[in-house]
Image 1 (cartoon, rainbow, N blue to C red):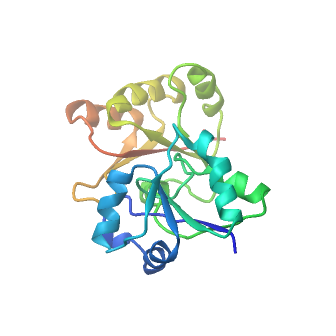
Image 2 (image 1 turned 60 degrees about the vertical axis):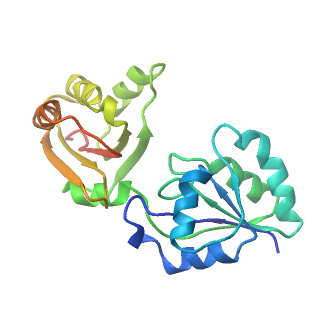
Length: 224
């Protein structure tokens, strides 16, 4: 049997690890980890001794073909990222696609991902939404903003803490200062915080108190 498991890992609180995720990681032949040092702490906590290999954005193009061949020969792999669900703004898509094309079974376990609690916590409409992940750093950033300015669905955007205030200032420029947003940081961790309000109100908050940690921003869509 050839198979790849995509296994979500906690975004902060280790109690969010599922029993099934632990079982799968214990039973597979190998674990592919975005950062073996970081994942090593997780595996040690749950007494998982399965061998690990590094699989990240800098080597995945070179390793995918060989990994697929190993799975076709009968080895079973699990892929984990540093936190959350693999392939959601993390490595995983290339390997998943290659496995599917090669006839290797792929199964993604349900589990932690940062944008779902951030969206639900926001109080903004969540019946329809669009996931943007990280916006382009330079090339294409303005073009993307012009497109998003017309988006009427709720938007989910990942932002690095040192870029948050700059990004909120850009929101003010492209979306308007009264656009409702919600910024969630350090979800499930000790210093979890969600700040809701207009772009200006939230920007003022984080200018006075610079943000730290992992951040998800929810932006209300353009009113019809």
